[in-house]
Length: 536
Image (cartoon, rainbow, N blue to C red):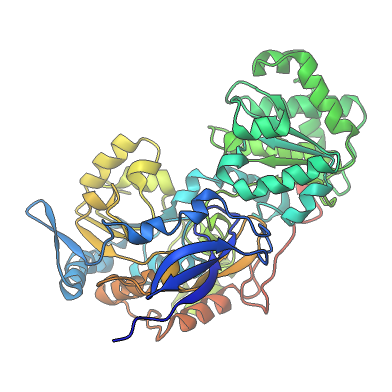
């Protein structure tokens, strides 16, 4: 038998939300190297070390290639018929009698199509209200603030190519030199054109060193800093929103309580440095505020991000080319992952599960009675806290796809104990993660280059992921596994796709006409609206 010929497949990096393109070179059917392409519209020929090392896991010696079922305390290899028989016997009765006792936990690394299918699987096949994903720990605060202000969760409402047009970039809690390395070229381009870059971070990170200007507030005081800057903008006559701002007087009244002396004291920064930043922002023509996970991951993360949005909006910079506000998505498909139905309160296309009109639209598309669609259930941490609980709201079973909550969730020790207490923990993964090692059933899934699909990067740009190779052994593509599970629990309706293209067409139709529309030709990116709903 002749070996497979050498070939090259252009695809998309699986790591961060920049979603660089590169060429994957295969020999004998196996990838041997990845090379950047200058035709990439985002990174323009650069790929960071993580992207270039993406091939390493493809050769990982622990790659899962067969289902594993727990027997006598040990995970042992079994065939697919036996694995699916376990699902039938374990979940089938629960789905029929108590679907609210089953949960689903997804990931911001899934393709748009898998995100869609996972949400559909939870609500149509399982009929459970309890589905959420690890992105709840990532951008949920920023998402809520963006929705509250603009009515849309879009991390960046502009392309990265706009960044060099900014004459002041303020990075708040974002260490992009290590988390989104290809974006650094845009910061450097802004500096080369005479722009200034301020990094607001308690630590001296590699990004701080490149930025050149640094303000180091105490952890947890980012919101106070934003209010202090807004206080000075009001004092200096810089409040000039270009669109109606609901709640304007309340916001400005609240900012009155944050004069420079108080802000400097609470943030632990010299008052002179605070005023220098405020003056730079006030004098800039196109200042741009970019937030990262730093200001979001606090008890009042939504209000903190809201305060930075208010600063940009009320000074009239939102909507300017090179200016305004943006929040930097982190995970590979963090943007698409929170648009197409795996959030506990969301339906495909960024529709709301609480909206009767949206519920009716999706019920009609899925050909199910509207009352079969559950209302929103547990969010991510609530879902993990409910695992193994016997009372109302507790879970007996959990299905995990593409996530490792034992490592990534808050309170990892307690999460581990909760997962151990489950009657059934089904994990779909390609490596034996810490969560998979606790499972009662592990199903071998697909890696990034073993599947087709699309991802949505931090700009809202939808890009194609091409299949370059087949999954090894008995491993299956994740979308096929979800369909297998739907059949196993006795709910095959809507989960019989002859090919991936049929699934993708279903996804396109499901999002057509919605805020996050992938169904119209070329897709549709909705920009932030003209009015802002501010919160004090």
